Image 1: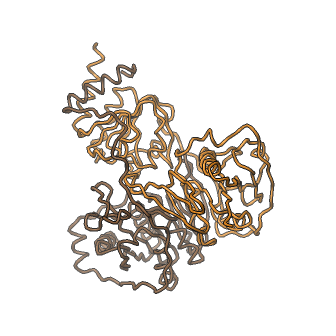
Image 2: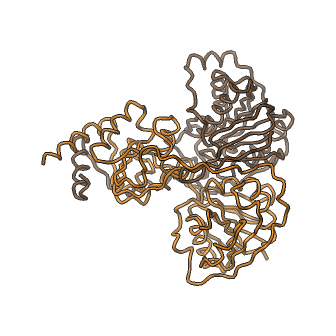
Image 3: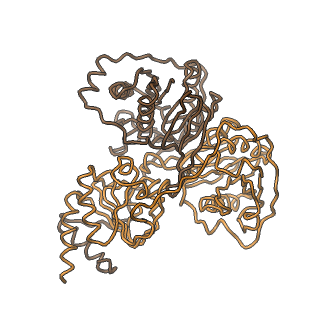
Length: 327
Length: 255
C-alpha cells in the first residue's frame, strides 16, 4: 500500500517555531483527520532542547541533529532532507512557500523524483490521490492539481491555515537522530546575519499605514502619498516593486520578505494584492484599497475598496482630512 | 568570468487573463507577455557584476517569439551574447521541463555563475534555479539580493533574504546557480530606440530541445480567482469616494 505519511518540514529560529510551521501542521492535521494519515513534524537543528516540549499537532516529532544544521545553510538542509524523507517513507511533504522552503523544493524534488506543487492554499486527499489548490500569477489565477502516485512536495502559502490548529494539549512522542549523511564539507557557508536597520520609522509600530504599490507610478507621486500620511499621522509603507526602485527604504516593505504589520488602518494605494504582499498585512484592523483594476486580488481581503484613480483621489482626500481639523 | 542569465516570458498579470477552452491553461492568443520580474533583477545583477569584473554576460531567453524582444533589450542594456530557447506555450511555466531543456547546454558552456529569478509569476512547481543546481551538480542559493565575487573568481558572497528584512550572508563556491530575488540596484532603463536598434542587429544562437525531457505537474483545472470581492465597494466620483473614506475613518476615530 502507498505510504500515508505526511512530513511537515518545520521552520524555526532561535529556539522558536515559526507561524508557518504551525500552519503546515494544521494543514497536515486536516488531511490526517479525514483519512487517517500519520503526521511527522521534522526539525533540522543543532539543538533540539528548546523545541522538544512543544505541544505540536503531529503524531510524532523527529529532530535531526547536527552542528551544521544550526545556521540557515540551504546546502546543509538540501543534503540531509532527501535521506530523512526516504527513511520516514514520506508520501506528502509540506514545506513553507517561504525563503527557506522555496530553496529546498528543487533539490529535494530532483533527489527523490518527487512532484512539486507551489503556492498551495488547499490540500486534500481522495483515496491515493492528492489534490492541491494553488494561487499563481499574483493571486489572479487558481490552479487545481492532482498527484496520483509518488512523493508530492507541497509549498504551503503562509496564512492559509489557522496556526492555532497546529498545536494541541499534549506533547507528541519525540525522537532525536543524527544526520544520515556527513555535513562537514558543504559548498555553501553561513557567515552572519545582518539585521535591518530601523532608519526612521518602524512600520510595525505605526497605527496608520498608507501603502504605496506599483499604481503610484513615480517617485514624484509618492510625495503626495507622503503628504496624505502626514495628515493622518501615519507612515508610508510599500510593496516590493516600490522598494526595489529605491523610492523607500527596505524597512518599509510589507510582505513575505519584509515586515508583517497589523495597523488600525491600512490604506492600500495602487496595490494589486499579490499573495506575498498580502501575507504581511492581512490582519490589519481596517483595510481600504484603491485600485483602478476591479479584478485586483487586494479587493478579496480589503474591507472597503474603490476603483477611482489614486492619483486623483490622494490630493482630494488629503484636503478633506485637513478640513476635518477645523471641525 | 562567464555569467549566464535566464529570462522567462510570463503572462503580464496587469492585463486581463483569459482561461482557454480546455479549462486548464490560459488562452494563448490573449496572453500579453512580460519578462519575469525577478529575472529582470537577475539580469541587472549580472550587469552590475560585469561592470566590476569585466565578465561576459550571456542572456538566455526562454519562451516564444517575445523572448527575442527580451533578448534585444538585454543586449541593449549591456549583455554580450543572446541565446534563444523556444519552448512550446503549454510548457512555459514548467520549471522541471525548462531545467531539463537548459542543463545540457549550460553544462557544456561552463558558466561561472548562473543567475535567474528565484520565482516566476506563472510557476506551479519548484524554482528553476534550484532544479538547475542539482542537474549541473552546482551549489545553489535562492532569495538572493546581492552578489559579490572575489578577485580570482572562485567564490561569491551573497545576501539571502529572510522575513522581517533580515539578511543572511553566505559564502558560495563558484561555479554556482543563484535564484535572484532582487538586484542591488533597480533594473536599468534602456530607451525603446536602443532596443529597436539592438533588435535589428540581434545575433541569436538558437537552442534545439534535447529529445528526453522531464515534466513537472500540470493543472487539471485553471480558474480565475473568485471575482466576488469581499470588499464593500465605495462608488461615485473622486470627491464622493473621499467623503466616504473620511466618514469611515471618523467612525473609527482615525481622524
